[in-house]
Amino acid sequence: GAVVSQHPSWVICKSGTSVKIECRSLDFQATTMFWYRQFPKQSLMLMATSNEGSKATYEQGVEKDKFLINHASLTLSTLTVTSAHPEDSSFYICSATTSGRFTDTQYFGPGTRLTVL
Amino acid sequence: AQSVTQLDSQVPVFEEAPVELRCNYSSSVSVYLFWYVQYPNQGLQLLLKYLSGSTLVKGINGFEAEFNKSQTSFHLRKPSVHISDTAEYFCAVRRSTGFQKLVFGTGTRLLVSP
Figure 1: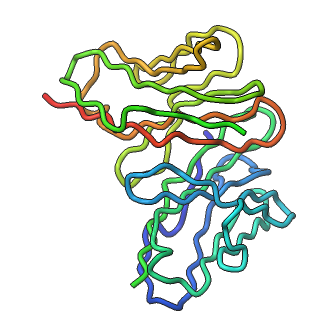
Figure 2: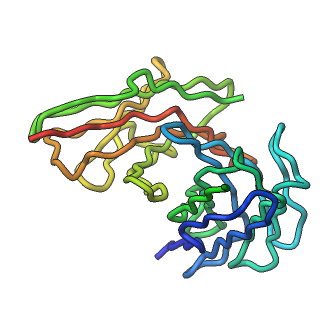
Figure 3: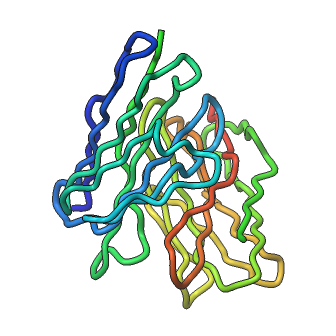
């Protein structure tokens, strides 16, 4: 149990275009999902936290207009990188958590590698 | 605020040797502690976690960690490593109450050679 998927696993896009990344909890309902960004050989940095049906809470320094997060259902959150530029190239990882059986554990997706040309 | 320090960026070991990956944390409030493993181009997998109770925590793949409150440490150990243990290991901390924000260390790359 506790499987989180991400789609796509990798994406290459041209500068100026927008890219949407999906994060799904496959076998549990995720009241809260997190989006992280990881630069090569570095740690994960939390970008934002999203609760189902609410606006996302962004970490300091993260542009909310550039990284649009939508948590429309208990199993799906999306991250849209708008007007992507080469500096947005990174590994994006989502995680999900819920109350009850999975209390206090975040389950991570496999990540999405974004390359902006 | 919480912070995590993983002093060793890379730890090379030979197969079947024991290994310890160090993690120290800082927090003014009670915390939960986690170790995650990341294989190349993959997400993170939970190895083990300390929430409360016994300070010696056993996880998957033969790993264990010991919570030491006085030394604010949560070192990860394995008595005998395999080639397949080669990966990046992240220590993480979060408050034991309230918002579930995980704060990660910078990671330690475990390199197991034959």
